[in-house]
Image 1 (spheres, rainbow, N blue to C red):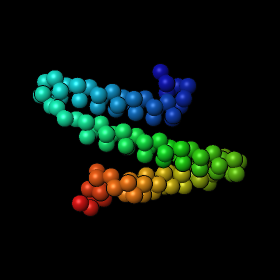
Image 2: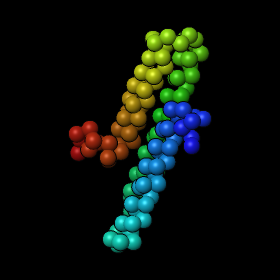
Image 3: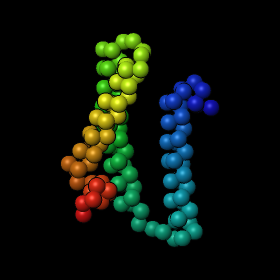
Image 4: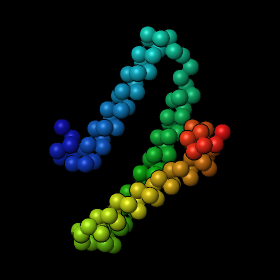
Length: 113
C-alpha cells in the first residue's frame, strides 16, 4: 500500500509500523495472559530511544539533503555519498549521544556494565 508511492521510504515506514504494532500486541498479551506488570521502565526506555532516533533522523536527513544539493549528478559515487556518510554520522551520533546520556542498554550492548 505505501511501498508503491513512497518506494524505499514506504517500505521502511511499513516495517517500522509493523514492528511497533508487534511490540504493542506482545505487551498486551504479556499483561493479559502472563500477568506481567511493571513495564513502565520499558516504556521510558522506549521513549528515550525514540527521542534519540528522531534526533539522529534529523541529522541524517540534513546531511543527505546537503550532500544532494552540493553533488548534483546521479552517478554511483554520488549515490554512495548520499548514503554512506549520513548513515555513518547517524550511527556515531546515536551511539555517542546514548553514551553521553548513560543509557544503560547501550552500555551493556557495547560491553560495559
